[in-house]
Length: 131
Image (cartoon, rainbow, N blue to C red; front, side):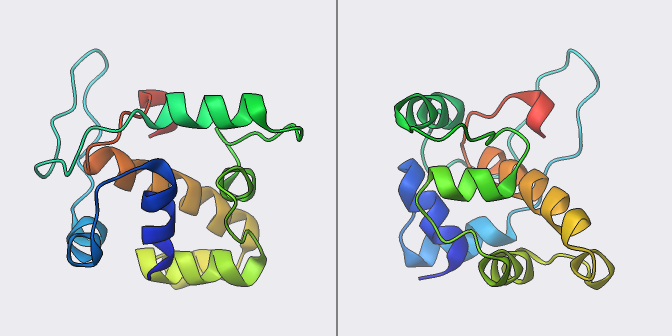
């Protein structure tokens, strides 16, 4: 099971092993002009309200986790390994540029944004400010 598929699974995406590879390779749509709806890059596997699920998990979690900006908190909220090595594995899987992987803060910022974009590109309902 790929690292990204663990995220998909925890959020309820209907993504079997064969679909995960397609989801990973789905192009992230270019940022739409302000006020214009963004068109999905590929046919969504299923519509998943990512924000609602994460907000519900955050409300039920005793820790104060800021999933909206922190990849570490996002992974913790989903009960997925958030260690540096795990994040590096996810970054490699998602194609993080080598220069960003050399700086953990930059890698984390890239990783959070890319995970949100990949979720949105594959049928996830994600607010525009997180993309």
